[in-house]
Image 1: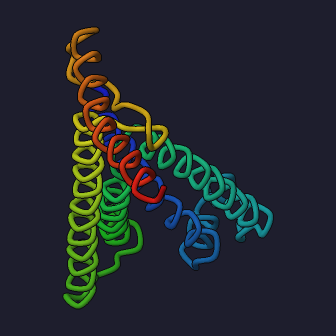
Image 2: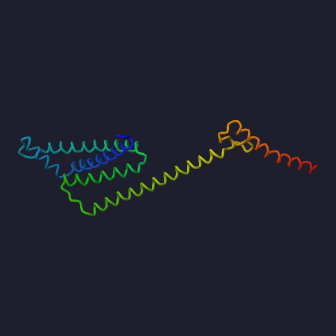
Image 3: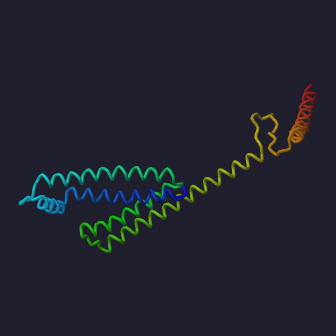
Length: 203
């Protein structure tokens, strides 16, 4: 897997872990866990549901909730490190989270999501994509402006002091530097001559 696509894998995986985190969090408190614990009690030969087994099952789901939460943040952080845009990572993470949450909800909890839920999820993802494109456009504009200013500064040269000659950035070597110095001297001589005439006129 190339480094340019690794962030995509980590972003999707973090979204999947976020969905599983939500599933285990719900299993910690839902009535479905009681039903599963009752079946496990009968499997071990208990004639009545064991409260101890139910607590063990709920405790297991709670630990899995914490585990997948930690894994999700680790994968998400890794994706942010590899990706060139944090907005892209957030969009992929959110989309994967929503889609897998819908599938797991239908499979495990027998939930039927209404059309309004799908509409809201679609609008949220679409809004994230629009914001991401706008942010990337701003970053590209800032980068282009900075490069253009840097290029103009390198072509025009710079002065550390008002009377210092311009730095030779034309690649002309020593001859180019001499031409710059000669032009500066020619500019200074008329000014010096005019200053001497002004002093003679005052005298």
